[in-house]
Image (cartoon, rainbow, N blue to C red):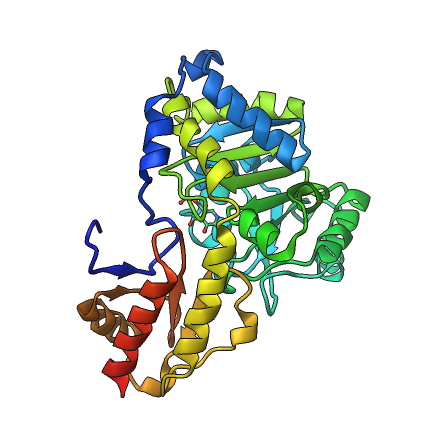
Length: 346
Ligand SMILES: Cc1ncc(COP(=O)(O)O)c(C=O)c1O
């Protein structure tokens, strides 16, 4: 927004690169990445692969491309993909699994964003001449629509075991895996272990202007490289952007804990306002989903009323709105926002 009067809780994607990040970008060594010649991209890919304990990584412009490249690389039309009902890949990637890869998506329900190993086992179809082949399982951690919830590593390991036993490809949409790591203390490599492939984003909580990575085995990344080109994602002197990602890892990863405490603070404050309800215990990372049913104001009007106060949030459901904390909102701004909302509703 570029306006200091505005406190923008719409998403953790709204951050602007700070002076240090811009300097790192300006000074980045570059080369033509389609030839594999960009030293900064190569450094970022190697570093991310190592952090997550995978053989290789591939830089992509967006998280959507990082996810969809995986499906296109491994899938055959008519295969079935199992994922949680509210997940990003099937609800907010414009039908990508079907459009690009011919995948049939089947949803598993959950209370907090994460299905169980047993649900996966029960969903696997018999192999015969009638059924689609159940071949891919996808999990999102943290889970956006479930309010930034964190999946316990034990549960991931159990699902991974069912995938291994049944020859299913297990993929993680880890756009916000950084938040899970910082909030829980579980290492990125431990989170990544049960998955064959991952997608991680630099442009959410880490504050880079763009950039995501697909991770997996060396053979998988070799093939994914061709698919990235097919999707139009072959970039040239893109070390300028990869430098922002490296800077973010060095400077912004640890700061996610501030976003988490700000989210908790915001949640407690919102919960104390008449008509706004949420379970503060459920705010595990940087996303706060508030139920405003009792205000008797519909979400679009609520969002507009707050916008007039200089506080931005988004409608999330029939009676809910979402607030996301990030690098560009401070605790003081959370206090100011809460005061404004309280005044408006008292
Ligand atoms: C959980 C999740 N996965 C994937 C994405 C896709 O990222 P992008 O917007 O960079 O395509 C998002 C974007 O907000 C997301 O929240």
